[in-house]
Image 1 (cartoon, rainbow, N blue to C red):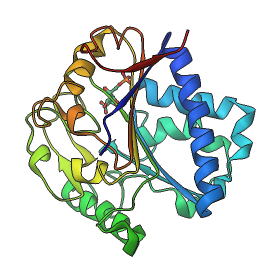
Image 2 (cartoon, helix red, strand yellow; image 1 turned 180 degrees about the vertical axis):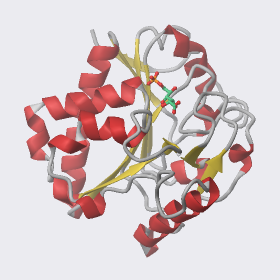
Image 3 (tube, rainbow, N blue to C red; image 1 turned 90 degrees about the vertical axis):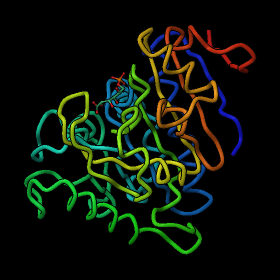
Image 4 (cartoon, rainbow, N blue to C red; image 1 turned 30 degrees about the vertical axis):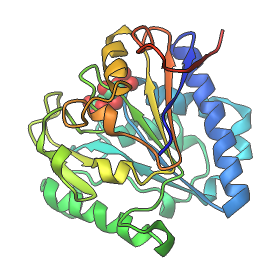
Length: 259
Ligand SMILES: O=C(O)[C@H](O)[C@@H](O)[C@H](O)[C@H](O)COP(=O)(O)O
């Protein structure tokens, strides 16, 4: 695993626009090379802003939306269509506006799905879908996602992996999370081994409240205490930040800043 690269943009707006442009380029490159691509979406304000910027750019038409698998890194375990679900936000920001193949859209289960309000069964179901999509060359229970995006919480959580919680010790690909410190308490999340199966992991953070989490995530902290420190891609890890989130970067971290 190569060390993370850090890119600092002026503010959240420019960060979202730049990340959307980066998504277009990367997805188009992967589709040209391999025919189809896979991405993993995140909830949160920055992640959703990136999707809205992608919907707004004319360059989105360069993507073959029917040859794109779309997964989620975590989900709030709520009824389908609930405004708090990451899926709902992603649909409104982007997915309802582009021609995705419904068979390639893989939202995490909701409480009104086939497993009802049983998050363990729902997590198991999502793990089975990932396993079914994994090919021999992936060498594991989940596909080698081309791009996996993650927001970063002020407490350094990523997906629904909150510091010190049992999910951080779990080796299964997908887990149910109960008692999350941020509401709603019940969630479904990929675990760190699944996140690390991605070719590229992009960590998105904006605002001063994220600056400590970003610093710790780049300072060799342990992933149980600082989950963002454990989120790394096989080939590439990018910290895509605004200036405020980058305010406490540790000395010696190479960064590329846009004006
Ligand atoms: O599930 C949640 O409670 C949130 O979605 C959360 O995980 C979010 O992604 C991060 O806290 C980053 O949030 P922002 O991008 O809004 O800063």
